[in-house]
Image (cartoon, rainbow, N blue to C red; front, side):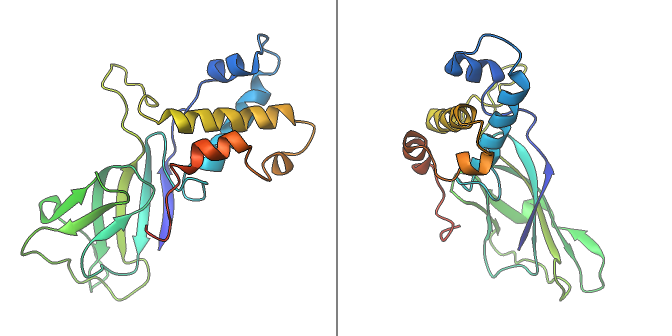
Length: 202
């Protein structure tokens, strides 16, 4: 199994203004530094290698597997918003797309999954590595405003945890980021851990 991010989030879960307010910074001379730490804190918890095992702001991923399973395909990085396509290489090596009406998408479960509808089976792919590819959109749903707020539905505990991580790196900025992130600050750990995905269940 392999995961490739196709489209990265366009914003971070918190704004620079929100972080500066927490840090009690009113000048602009440290904006670039704070933005860097905010992105580092976000990357620490978000995505394939993130602490949470989740996608936060809307992003598009490609899941690649060697063959179709007997039943459902579990989609990592919840919450799952939608499945864009399910494609595979047929026995002749030609890429085919599974008709969307032939499978059901469960985006309510964590992790989400895709399974053939009743009386339909997954097709037979080419006997080769990476023969099946599922493109999906993950992350917490944006608001229904126009324009939508992409971070509106991210749990406040996650936002607060990222805020504490960012503040931790800013406070200990004379150290390198690796040292500053060697262990989660106690408050951040408590806030984030309740949203951490058990990867053994994914």
